[in-house]
Length: 196
Image (cartoon, rainbow, N blue to C red; front, side, top):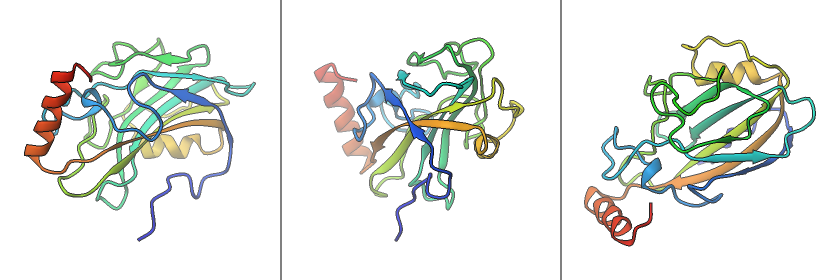
Protein backbone atom coordinates (compact mmCIF):
# COMPACT_ATOMS: atom_id res chain seq x y z
CA UNK A 1 0.00 0.00 0.00
CA UNK A 2 1.34 3.45 -0.91
CA UNK A 3 2.15 5.86 1.90
CA UNK A 4 0.01 8.99 1.73
CA UNK A 5 2.19 12.01 1.02
CA UNK A 6 -0.04 15.10 1.33
CA UNK A 7 2.38 17.18 -0.77
CA UNK A 8 2.85 14.68 -3.61
CA UNK A 9 0.66 16.54 -6.12
CA UNK A 10 1.26 20.08 -4.90
CA UNK A 11 3.77 22.46 -6.49
CA UNK A 12 7.20 22.33 -4.87
CA UNK A 13 7.92 25.41 -2.78
CA UNK A 14 10.71 26.62 -0.51
CA UNK A 15 11.03 25.41 3.08
CA UNK A 16 11.53 27.33 6.32
CA UNK A 17 12.03 26.37 9.96
CA UNK A 18 9.33 25.15 12.36
CA UNK A 19 9.80 23.94 15.94
CA UNK A 20 7.49 23.07 18.81
CA UNK A 21 7.96 22.86 22.56
CA UNK A 22 5.48 19.96 22.48
CA UNK A 23 7.25 17.60 20.09
CA UNK A 24 10.33 17.20 17.92
CA UNK A 25 10.03 16.36 14.24
CA UNK A 26 9.35 12.63 14.03
CA UNK A 27 8.51 12.33 17.74
CA UNK A 28 5.32 11.18 19.45
CA UNK A 29 2.69 13.65 20.57
CA UNK A 30 2.54 14.04 24.36
CA UNK A 31 -0.76 13.75 26.23
CA UNK A 32 -1.54 17.44 25.75
CA UNK A 33 -1.97 16.91 22.02
CA UNK A 34 -3.99 13.69 22.29
CA UNK A 35 -7.78 13.84 22.20
CA UNK A 36 -9.80 13.57 25.36
CA UNK A 37 -12.80 14.59 23.24
CA UNK A 38 -12.33 11.36 21.27
CA UNK A 39 -11.79 9.25 24.40
CA UNK A 40 -8.01 9.02 24.69
CA UNK A 41 -7.22 8.78 28.44
CA UNK A 42 -5.26 11.84 29.55
CA UNK A 43 -5.80 13.61 26.22
CA UNK A 44 -6.20 17.38 26.54
CA UNK A 45 -6.86 18.57 22.95
CA UNK A 46 -4.37 21.42 23.30
CA UNK A 47 -3.02 22.88 20.09
CA UNK A 48 0.78 22.65 20.14
CA UNK A 49 3.13 25.55 20.76
CA UNK A 50 4.70 26.50 17.44
CA UNK A 51 7.57 28.81 16.49
CA UNK A 52 8.71 29.46 12.94
CA UNK A 53 11.40 31.49 11.20
CA UNK A 54 12.96 32.08 7.81
CA UNK A 55 9.83 32.65 5.72
CA UNK A 56 10.64 34.22 2.37
CA UNK A 57 10.42 37.88 1.48
CA UNK A 58 6.96 38.70 0.22
CA UNK A 59 5.17 36.70 2.92
CA UNK A 60 2.01 38.62 3.81
CA UNK A 61 0.22 36.07 6.01
CA UNK A 62 0.40 32.52 7.31
CA UNK A 63 -1.98 29.61 7.65
CA UNK A 64 -1.45 26.67 9.99
CA UNK A 65 -2.82 23.17 9.43
CA UNK A 66 -2.57 19.83 11.25
CA UNK A 67 -3.45 16.79 9.14
CA UNK A 68 -3.50 13.05 9.93
CA UNK A 69 -2.39 11.44 6.68
CA UNK A 70 -3.01 7.92 7.99
CA UNK A 71 -6.62 8.18 9.21
CA UNK A 72 -8.71 5.29 7.81
CA UNK A 73 -11.07 7.55 5.88
CA UNK A 74 -9.76 7.59 2.32
CA UNK A 75 -9.07 11.30 2.73
CA UNK A 76 -7.10 11.60 5.96
CA UNK A 77 -8.35 13.75 8.85
CA UNK A 78 -7.91 17.49 9.38
CA UNK A 79 -7.34 18.27 13.07
CA UNK A 80 -6.76 22.02 12.84
CA UNK A 81 -6.79 24.84 10.33
CA UNK A 82 -6.06 28.51 11.01
CA UNK A 83 -6.18 31.20 8.32
CA UNK A 84 -5.09 34.84 8.02
CA UNK A 85 -2.31 34.86 10.62
CA UNK A 86 -0.51 38.21 10.15
CA UNK A 87 2.98 38.11 8.64
CA UNK A 88 4.39 39.75 11.79
CA UNK A 89 3.43 36.70 13.89
CA UNK A 90 5.99 33.88 14.22
CA UNK A 91 4.67 31.94 17.22
CA UNK A 92 1.48 30.41 18.58
CA UNK A 93 1.25 29.43 22.23
CA UNK A 94 0.02 26.04 23.42
CA UNK A 95 -3.77 26.07 23.61
CA UNK A 96 -4.14 28.96 21.15
CA UNK A 97 -6.50 26.71 19.20
CA UNK A 98 -9.05 26.17 21.95
CA UNK A 99 -12.68 26.91 21.08
CA UNK A 100 -12.90 30.58 20.15
CA UNK A 101 -9.16 30.80 19.44
CA UNK A 102 -8.18 32.65 22.65
CA UNK A 103 -4.48 32.70 21.76
CA UNK A 104 -4.80 33.61 18.09
CA UNK A 105 -3.68 37.04 16.86
CA UNK A 106 -6.27 39.59 15.73
CA UNK A 107 -7.59 38.79 12.27
CA UNK A 108 -6.77 35.08 12.39
CA UNK A 109 -9.58 32.54 12.55
CA UNK A 110 -10.09 28.78 12.83
CA UNK A 111 -12.00 26.73 10.29
CA UNK A 112 -14.07 23.72 11.33
CA UNK A 113 -11.92 20.57 11.35
CA UNK A 114 -13.14 17.14 10.24
CA UNK A 115 -14.96 16.77 13.57
CA UNK A 116 -16.78 19.99 12.50
CA UNK A 117 -15.34 21.90 15.44
CA UNK A 118 -13.66 25.28 14.90
CA UNK A 119 -10.79 24.38 17.21
CA UNK A 120 -7.82 22.02 17.51
CA UNK A 121 -8.79 18.43 18.22
CA UNK A 122 -6.04 16.08 19.35
CA UNK A 123 -4.77 12.79 17.98
CA UNK A 124 -6.89 9.67 18.45
CA UNK A 125 -5.83 6.86 16.09
CA UNK A 126 -8.14 3.83 16.17
CA UNK A 127 -6.79 1.12 18.50
CA UNK A 128 -4.57 -1.32 16.68
CA UNK A 129 -4.41 0.76 13.49
CA UNK A 130 -0.69 1.39 13.89
CA UNK A 131 1.18 4.68 14.08
CA UNK A 132 -0.30 7.76 12.45
CA UNK A 133 1.62 10.75 11.07
CA UNK A 134 0.41 14.26 11.86
CA UNK A 135 1.68 16.89 9.44
CA UNK A 136 1.93 20.21 11.26
CA UNK A 137 2.42 22.83 8.56
CA UNK A 138 2.88 26.60 8.54
CA UNK A 139 2.11 27.95 5.07
CA UNK A 140 3.72 31.27 4.05
CA UNK A 141 1.31 33.07 1.73
CA UNK A 142 1.60 36.05 -0.61
CA UNK A 143 -1.76 37.58 0.40
CA UNK A 144 -2.91 39.19 3.65
CA UNK A 145 -6.21 37.28 3.54
CA UNK A 146 -6.67 33.97 1.77
CA UNK A 147 -10.34 34.80 1.17
CA UNK A 148 -12.12 31.73 2.54
CA UNK A 149 -15.17 32.09 4.81
CA UNK A 150 -14.94 30.94 8.44
CA UNK A 151 -17.23 27.98 7.72
CA UNK A 152 -15.01 26.65 4.90
CA UNK A 153 -13.38 23.25 5.19
CA UNK A 154 -9.61 22.78 5.58
CA UNK A 155 -9.61 21.18 2.11
CA UNK A 156 -11.15 24.37 0.69
CA UNK A 157 -8.44 26.36 2.47
CA UNK A 158 -5.82 24.13 0.86
CA UNK A 159 -7.32 24.71 -2.57
CA UNK A 160 -7.39 28.48 -2.02
CA UNK A 161 -3.72 28.43 -0.97
CA UNK A 162 -2.63 26.55 -4.10
CA UNK A 163 -1.51 29.60 -6.08
CA UNK A 164 -0.49 31.70 -3.08
CA UNK A 165 1.96 29.47 -1.17
CA UNK A 166 5.50 30.83 -1.15
CA UNK A 167 6.94 28.28 1.29
CA UNK A 168 6.02 25.62 3.84
CA UNK A 169 7.45 24.78 7.24
CA UNK A 170 6.67 21.16 8.14
CA UNK A 171 6.95 19.18 11.36
CA UNK A 172 5.65 15.59 11.55
CA UNK A 173 4.44 14.17 14.87
CA UNK A 174 3.19 10.65 15.50
CA UNK A 175 0.65 8.87 17.68
CA UNK A 176 -0.51 5.28 18.11
CA UNK A 177 -3.27 3.73 20.17
CA UNK A 178 -2.64 0.09 21.00
CA UNK A 179 -5.31 -0.84 23.56
CA UNK A 180 -7.18 1.23 26.12
CA UNK A 181 -5.33 -0.50 28.97
CA UNK A 182 -1.91 0.15 27.45
CA UNK A 183 -2.81 3.77 26.67
CA UNK A 184 -3.97 4.33 30.24
CA UNK A 185 -0.75 2.75 31.51
CA UNK A 186 1.43 5.00 29.34
CA UNK A 187 -0.53 8.10 30.39
CA UNK A 188 -0.12 7.07 34.04
CA UNK A 189 3.64 6.67 33.53
CA UNK A 190 3.85 10.14 31.99
CA UNK A 191 1.88 11.64 34.87
CA UNK A 192 4.12 9.94 37.43
CA UNK A 193 7.29 11.09 35.68
CA UNK A 194 5.99 14.65 35.40
CA UNK A 195 6.32 14.70 31.63
CA UNK A 196 3.54 15.87 29.38
